[in-house]
Structures are given as C-alpha cells and as structure tokens.
Length: 160
Length: 389
Image 1 (cartoon, each protein chain N blue to C red):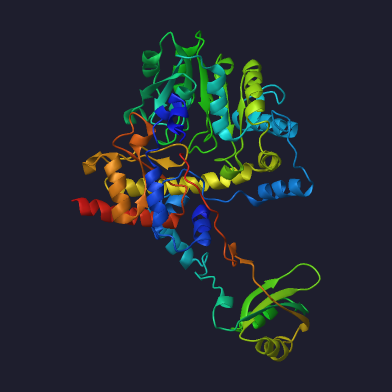
Image 2: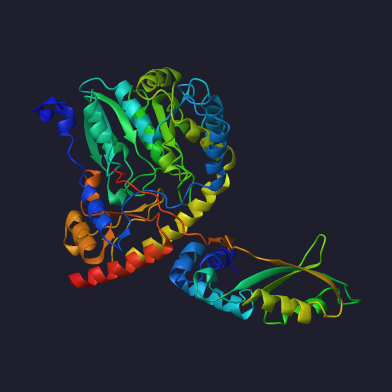
C-alpha cells in the first residue's frame, strides 16, 4: 500500500483519482486499484465531511468524557470499550495513557441529552468506575481544518 | 505646469510597460476566475517562522541591523548553503542580506556594469534582468534557449553570444517561466567556455530548493567557477515568504564588499523582523521545504498529465513551479491565447512572449495553486480547446 496515496486521501478525499495519483506518483489505474483494496481491507474506514454546525440552525453539543474503568481478566479494556462504542451517540472512543483510562467523545443535540447519556447509559456500564464530562465550548480546528473564517490579504500585481 | 515627462531620465522611459499587468487588472474584476498567473507560493509562511518574527517584535527588536544583515542570520545562511548545496561562504565578508533576491540582482548589475558592457541573458526568463541592465547603461544580449534542449543554455549558444564587451552571464536556473534546470554536466559545458575569461556569472538560484528528481547544483560548485560566480538567493520561494522581502547574495569578498557599500546607501539594512524570522527558517525549516516541494511535485505531475492529455505539447519541468506548454497547435499567438482564454473561461495564464525571445508559442501556468483550482483550470481549458475546433 502506498502511504503517499493514503496521506493524500486523508488530506482531501474529494480529489479526483487523477489528482490523487499525481500526488502519490502513480498512474490513475494503480491508484484506483489501491484505493479499492484499502477500502476492502478497511485500511480506509470511510469518508466524512467536517461540518461547522455552529453556523447552522441545528443545536449541537459535543462533550469529551474522561472515563475510568476496571480492566477485565483476559479482555483488558477491549470488552468495555466495545460496550461503550456501540452507542450511536459515541463519536470517538480512545484508550488513554495517564490519569484516566478512556476518552469518549459524545455529540448530542443539547447539554441535557449528553448528560442523560452519561448518567443513564455510560456510567452504569459494568466496570466503569467514574466519569468526568467536559463540554466543548468552541471548536477552533479539527482534522487540520480551521473553523474561523480566514481573512485574505490584499495582493498586488507583481511582475514575477 | 510642470512637464514631468521631460524630467524623467530617458532610460526609465525606454523600459516598456508591463505586458502582463492587464491580465491582473481584468482578473481583479472577475468573480470566479482562476489565476495561474502570479508566480507565488500559495501557502502562508510556516507558523513557527511567523512566530519567530512576532517574538522578535515582542522583545523590542525593531532597530536597524548591521548593513550586511544580522550576524546570526549570516551564520545560519552559511551553514544552510553548506548543508543543502555544499557551498562555502564566510558569514563575515561573503554574505549580504538583501531585500529579496531582486535587490541582489540589482546590486550585482549596478556594481559591475560600465556603460556598454554586455550581459548575456538566456531567455525565456524572469522579466527584470534586461530592464535593470539597460537602466545601468549595460547592454542586454538575449540568448534564446530551445524547447528541444529542455530550455538549457548550451555551450555553443553561450560561445556565440560572447564578445570582447561581455561582462556578465545571468544564469536563471531553475528557470522561471520554463521550469528548466541545469545539472552539473550541463553547467560544466558552460564552465569550459567561461574558465580563463573575466566573465562573471550572476546565478539566480531563487528556486534552488524546488527541483524534482535531482538536487540543484550551483555554478559556484564547479572547479574554478566559485571565484567567477555571484549567487543570488532568497527566502520567498523556499519558505513561502514572498511578503517578508528577504534574500541574500554570496560571492567573492571584494565584490560583496562593494555591493554592501551600495546596499548601505540605498537600503541601510533589510527588514529586521524578517531577518529574525529567517533565522528560524534556516535553522528549523528543512522539513517545511520538503513538505511544500512534495506538494508542488504532485501538482506538477497532475498538470503535466492534464496538458498532455488535452493534446498540448509540454516539456516536463524539473524545477520551480511553472509549466510552459506549447500552444502553437491552436494557431494563436501566446498573447491571443491568454486574452481569449481569460475572456472565455476566466482562467489567467501568462503569454510566453512576456519572458523574452523564445517565449512566443508558449504560455506560462503557475502550479502553486490548489489541486481544486488546477482541476477546474484543466476542465475550462478542455472546453476552451473544444470551442476552437
């Protein structure tokens, strides 16, 4: 698998196969085949848009939840992680090093909805010993994309 | 009433107005136009470099610097040139920090030209050489490079252009607008002509970091050519720092001393904030260069393939960020092509004729633009070419 091709897709998956191939230094046919293979192998999990919901009428709340869990014999953290990530509300779920065990990112329509999810679904899971919920107040940057509108400098004519 | 025109010196009046300005004026009025016109990186300066400039302001570093530039910056430049291009220049005495590469060219011409001295300028090339030479009473001698030679200057062409009045050879590689480069063997051919003469080479190496497939070689790397070469370079293209207006020149100490004398009267010292930012660029910017270079390389391959698949003959550029497709198959002059393409499809490219003899029949497209813009430009070019049939 060509890592340059994966990197190009990760940067902008809307590029044409010709553009992706040029970035990776291969022919469009090779790129097409590699992408199909990467999708089959689930090296590429999917393609999604980054949306600035703040600028829409849709209410949207995101929370980052620190979760402490008791690992289980033979399964470690994976079994509990599975029980957490199956919920549709869970956007991301990571095992962490440091003072807590897992980060769970939840998106919901309101503070109440998120709080209810934590209180009624996440916290009661067997093996979860504690949670701390942090609401995200403003998004500045996600996946290398900046939310704020970027001003443009006045440019002059240069005889270059 | 003052007759200002009669006050102007004749040499300034003799410089023709820019042939490409009109494209930018038209472009400014268009909404969804795509410009592959201006040759400028499309990235903002890497943040750690900008931050170093800001930090210098916070510390109150707002005074003039030494005429030749901050000694730390000159040391960084010296280390950088050794590391990246195997060139050895002493920080004190052989390096002068200038206001862009352009000032370096200007200083070299002004310090070396006597009235009537001839300057050999391979074309197509950057537009400033000829007018500057004329302004300083020199005589530009244009030598047309050929597509079949990959736009390299050949020893035969050089030999044929040399006269007893030849003072300088401008060596504009990697080349704007063709994207041509000259490798060590190519340079050696020229060096064989130049050794034993008093001709100095002004090597404009502003695109030295942007080569694809092989590293740039400077004329100063060749035996007996170090003492015959003034290297002009800068931060604009390598680090996407065009607006900081910072460059440098290197060469034999006696010449650099004379050029520093002129620089101290005309400029005093290059912008202080830019110089502090530039230290950061040279010390910690190698990865930025590589990232941008790889990005340009991808765009280069895409646009080259695009032009060729639309039936435009195109030399594969190995340097800078320009493509120079031949448009003779359309039956138009390069200016007609650019006028009509802009009018009909709202895409700006520059007529090759603007870059001197040998440019007619070609247009310059700058691929320092987003993949989206390059893709859309190719779509529009396809419609344009279809409409001609």
